[in-house]
Amino acid sequence: MQNLAPIALFVYNRPEHTRRTIKFLQQNRLAEESRLFIFSDAARKGDEEKVKEVREYISSVEGFKSVEVVERERNAGLANSIIEGVTRLTREYDKVIVFEDDLLSSPYTLQYFNDALNRYESEDRVMHICAYMYPLKNAGGLPETFFYRASGSWGWATWKRSWQHFESDIDKIISRFDKQKINDFSIDHSMNFWKQVHEFKNGKNNSWAIRWYASIFLRNGLCLNPASSLIDNIGHDGTGVHSGKNDMYSVAISQNPVSYFPDKIAENQVAYLQIRDFLKHRKGNLWQRLVRFAKEKF
View 1 (tube, one colour):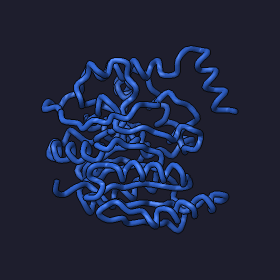
View 2 (cartoon, one colour):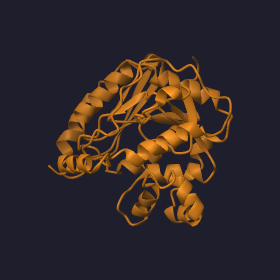
View 3 (cartoon, rainbow, N blue to C red):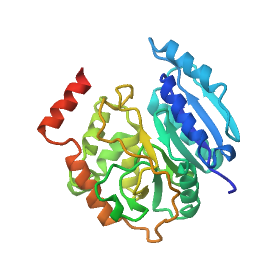
């Protein structure tokens, strides 16, 4: 396969997560033909030793066509690091595959990304490719891949033509929403996406991902998803920036290559309803919620 997308890997202060993420990436079918760019953010106070350990490890990573390590001298935070790294690579290569330091991949994840990037390169409405999918109860009834409105941040890819529409100004985003759009954006109020928008405005989070999803949504964009997840997030152990300690999103990583991609550029309504049902019930009953709360606190 020619003209493979570069891989952007964003790391910080989790050496063991980083080692596992890279180990699984190295086992991907297209790893040896892919360029890997590792973006290492500088340490905040108290994180110096862990960041140093991560940087010592990534300085010796092999198994890819090339490896470039970008070490920041000042801490930028995850959002700024991702925005700047994705902007750079889409400018240089027209497309990019994005990983963070807590994502385990299938041996076919890079193949899936590159096949999809090539397949939908000229389809302006397709703006984002996801590799993670929730543990849906009836995923076997879905096509191998499908389109859905919301973007996922646990292993994804995009093109320069899409990323150029990323809107960083939260006030501009909010001004374009009405009551119906808020409902549609939040998957019939089954997910707290609109709350995340306002939390960003009020300085309670610094999420690039919610602004990227909003940017896609406001352009009527679509995101390609696999029915069986090609990624598992191991960051729900209390070490992640935006994730607590829980297992509601844990999945078994698909070990099969993806061979089907939809021709019709439209949201899959069956998949939409399954995802909405999962999101509505993902926290479980009252007892399950109490147990999860206790785990996260103690």
